[in-house]
Length: 229
Image 1 (tube, rainbow, N blue to C red):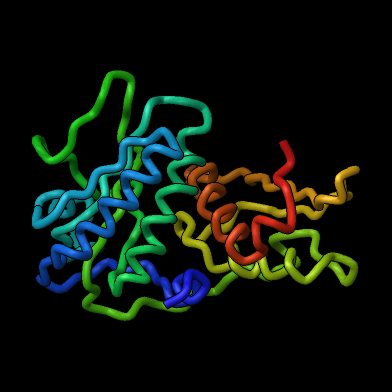
Image 2 (cartoon, helix red, strand yellow):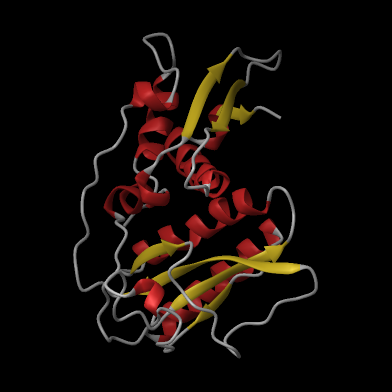
């Protein structure tokens, strides 16, 4: 499965089979965790064969069978949530390529003592359930490319492909509160893209923006543009 196929095939799965993760799969996930932790200055940890993290009144009727999950943490900072989204989604897409299913969880989990370790100044942002799904997931209604960007007849194909990849990015309650703008080219002939979040009473918009930016990069090709600084 290619990374683009993983983007299209991924669904948020909340019901899981009682099937352990094979050792080679755990090793592949751990290698990627080490990579994104170093690049994103994060402290993501994989917890396996542990049923209590998603076994609370908070997720009654929402999650079932979760025994494996990522604890996603990092040092407190203004951009922490966006980094969590960008790098956490890399784990989600790798899991999809490995034949697993996932679901981001902002509230419906409980912290289980002894399953993770935090360094000074760090906090847990969210959990991500991972395992073999007991359901197929749903194709959710998505906003159009025009609603999510300033795409027009004059914008290049790669920009539209980037927005289409962001279109299917997971967001809190499917809110899709992000927007991509194709800007004028710089002197070095490199296109510039601006990504912004919109207001939401639900919150999680920075985390969602990080996820959407990763999807956009994969769909558009990082070689075709630069992010506006």
